[in-house]
Length: 270
Image 1 (cartoon, one colour):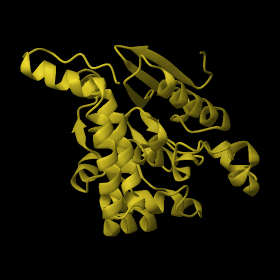
Image 2 (tube, rainbow, N blue to C red):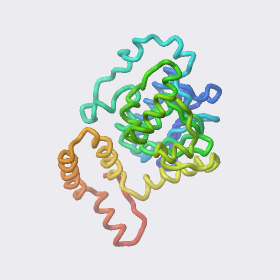
Image 3 (cartoon, rainbow, N blue to C red):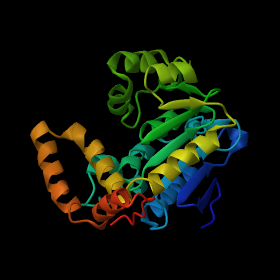
C-alpha cells in the first residue's frame, strides 16, 4: 500500500512505519492520522509481521498536531463521527479510541524516538509497548502552552508510566525534558546515540520476532494492558484461563523442544 505522509516497509518480520513530513517535524495532519491507523492495523493483520517499529524521518519523531490544522480545527472534530469507529467486541473499547489504539494491536509496538516528541507525538510514544530514544530526543506535553488540556487519555497513561508527581510536573508546566531525564523518570526504556537508534530498535524487534513466542507476546501484551482495569482476582483468573490454552499450543511444544534439543527456536505463533 502507498501512503502520502508515511513510509511503510516490512523486512525480517518487522513492519517499520516512518512518519514522513520532515519539513514539518512530522506534525500530524488528518491524512497522516488516518494513514497511521491504517498502517498499524495492516501490520497487525499481517501474519509475516511479528513486531512494529514507529519512528520519524528527519530530526523529529512527531512534534504534535500540525499548527496550521490546529488553528482551524473545529471543536466538534474531536468527537467527529469519522473517528468513532464501531467497536471490535474482541478488544477492550478503551483501546479503540482516536489515539489509544496501539495497545489493541496484536503485535508489540516499538517507538524509536529519533527527535522531538511533543503533544500527540508524546501520546503515541506512551501508548507504545517500548520506547527507545536517541540521546538528542526532547519530550514535552505542550498542551498547557497552547491553552489546551491533557488530551486523549494522557492524564491516565502518563502517571502509570512515570508516576503522579512526574506526570503533574510534565503536564502542568509543559517544560521540555531531554532523553536522560526521560530515562531517569522511566518515560523511556533505553537511550542510545542517534546513529545507533535504528539498529537498537531492530535488534529488539528481532528478539521479539525470533527468540520468544509471538503467541506468548500477544497474550502477555493483552494481559498487561488489561491489568489496569482488573482486580487481582480477575487478573489471576484470566491468567489461569490463558495458561490452560497455552499448555496446548504449538509454541509451548516448540518452547520445550528447542530447549531440550539445544537449538534456536522455530516459533510459529500458534
